[in-house]
Length: 224
Image 1 (tube, one colour):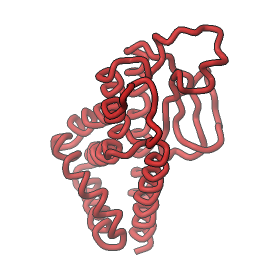
Image 2: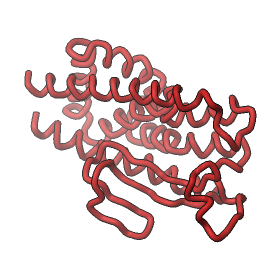
Image 3: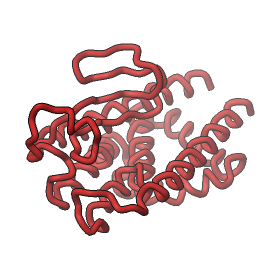
Image 4: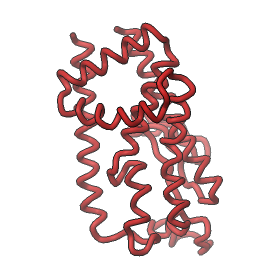
């Protein structure tokens, strides 16, 4: 069990690195100015230029130049060409989906199950597992352990990459899926709507609830 947990943690860190790095490269390729690239959350333990390594390896983010951000008005340059929200709707969506796309590629290369198939099944598995952490989620975790025992580290890497891609494609405001949709439902792609903040607050609580439920499931799985 300890070996499973250690390898699961290592795979999780690799998935985070792939996801965040792919997004950073995509933003740079489309000419968006990057302010920060953070791996993890919580206190900063290491900084190199714009890259931050944080204490808790539970995710990450890429902070971009955006004219809706108060920092923009403190800059010497008033150019908006390199601001994320001034890119076309298609470009905003493509950049937002770059992280999950990279994970699908990883899943396809490292797992016997095609990446997209794993992502599609991941939607229901994430939700059902979160709703039943002590039963359905236990079955999925046992299956993940079997994948590691029978097919090895890289097979489990592909499996987890597909499921994390599915989670990030959920249509929540703070996920990649939600970010890809927002430019198309705004009257002006450059400015958020009034309803976005209440929806964002609701979405973050959904995401937290899903994450906490799976954490409880993992603790229960280890204890038993």
